[in-house]
Amino acid sequence: MVRMGALRITGMLVRKGEEAGLCAVLEVLGHRSEDPDSDYIAYRLRELQIFDQVPILQNARLLRDLSSENVRDGLGQLEELFGREV
Image (cartoon, rainbow, N blue to C red; front, side, top):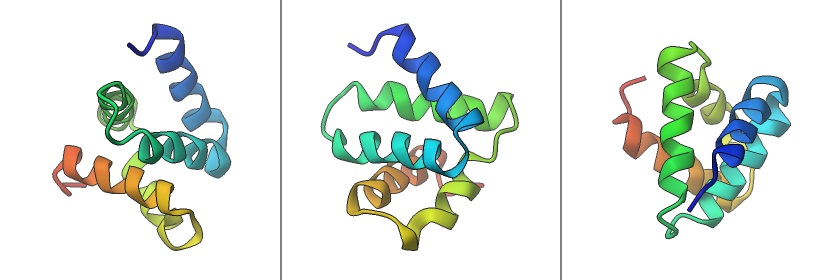
């Protein structure tokens, strides 16, 4: 199970780590796509987008062509969760 610390780190990486931080989180998300714990990370990213107004999905889409397959897979997971609504 993902611990609360991991969720806090996810938030910090995305907020303060800029492009590299978001890339790192998406890399883990894509690499662990079959792991049920990845859902917690994806939901945390969605919370950041909705409640904290952090443009997660928009920024992740900008990284699509510059990133690894795992990052693209992580983005795909987010688009499924967000419903491509944003």
